[in-house]
Amino acid sequence: MSEMTFPLPDVGEGLTEAEIVTWHVAPGDTVALNQVICEIETAKSLVELPSPFTGVVAELLVEVGDTVPVGDPIMRVTVDGGEAAATASHAPADASADTHAAPVDSDETRDAVADASASVQHEDSEGGAVLVGYGTGGAVTSRRRRGGEPPLAAGGAGAAAASIPVAEAAPVLAKPPIRKLAKDLGVDLAEVTGTGIAGEVLRDDVVRQASQASLFRNLSTPEPQAAREERIPLKGMRKQIAKAMVESAFEAPHVSVFTDVDATRTMEFVKRLKASTDFAGVKVSPLLIFAKAMLWAIRRNPEVNSTFTDTEIIRHNFVNLGIAAATPRGLVVPNIKDAQELNLRDLATAIEQLTITARDGRTQPAEMANGTITITNIGVFGMDFGTPILNPGECGIMAMGTIREKPWVVDGEVRPRMVTTVGGSFDHRIVDGDVISRFVADVASVLEEPALLLD
Image 1: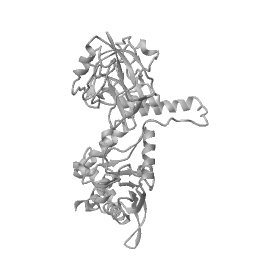
Image 2: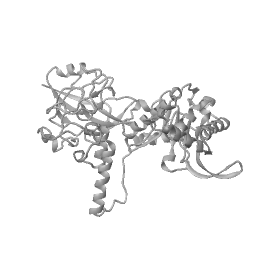
Image 3: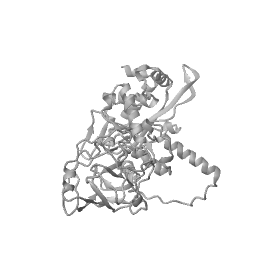
Image 4: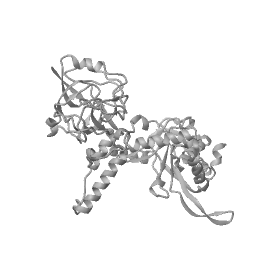
């Protein structure tokens, strides 16, 4: 028998530190190669770490909530002599598992299915493990746990209990982001009725359970007096957002332009698309037409799709279209790669998938990298307009306000029309007022007359 340590790996994007969000193992647990052992929160996303060892957990060296520098040990594992190198070097290139699979047998069940390491390389050096290519490739099978059992923290009282088999308890099927949501909301997954395939617990199931529990508490007990103030540590994604916004606001001179738009024909077009069999099963909204209008306007004003450096302006001949998404963990801006190549239906599918992934907390760093221009839809919050801050490295960010019925002059007569406000902020080092104004006017033209997209 020998003992190995597992250092926090760099999962990409220049990671320097990460916060331990959830432990999926406890001292005394047997872990398999590529089994998810914990979830970490980086500056950009939530990432699951698979084990490079097969062995028994000897000690968890950090606790949930701790921020750990890359390279610091987080876990010790006892393995059979010579087995550590063998297990790591023979890591499957693409381990896979069915997300909705039922229990395999009474001794090993498939819990939540997670992204795992695409390739793992181990080098035995002073009892440590060095991981190369530690990414988010295939899915893995997690250890057996009792239904609804929460993740165990280091030194927790449940460590010994975890080894006691409970054959009669059915496992709870839920993906890691759903488990984290349940933990954040104080929901016991064992008490939630899953409405997904094979009884999988979905996001709406957890939110519904939390709402019912909150209502019961409000009816049965008085709300305790809240503290006069709270101190929230600045770390993880919020720390990165703050840094990026300061950098953007003070390095790029912003100029903002906006205009009111009669979007009546856009709303009629959206209604026709929803009724079309070609768009069956795809979410269609005004945001789709706004995104397509952006792509149309970029072809006519390519200067806005650029990046400023100290030595040159890089004009992109492709569009990685960012969609700003508000999530429980903060603002993320994943982008649709080569959006200019997509037809209207494919663009609708891409926007829907991007939104679902962001909402579930599964957006990965690569999905937020290399954006060229961004959309923010503040209309979903009932706002008419605002002045957005540029995503660092981009020249433009466009915003669309809420669409509401207002009086509008048409052919000399005041009529009720569906009106919105569109516009955005731009890097004045790259573009001047004439280009900005033409670009915003082109976007507005498509919203006023979607038939221009046929041009």
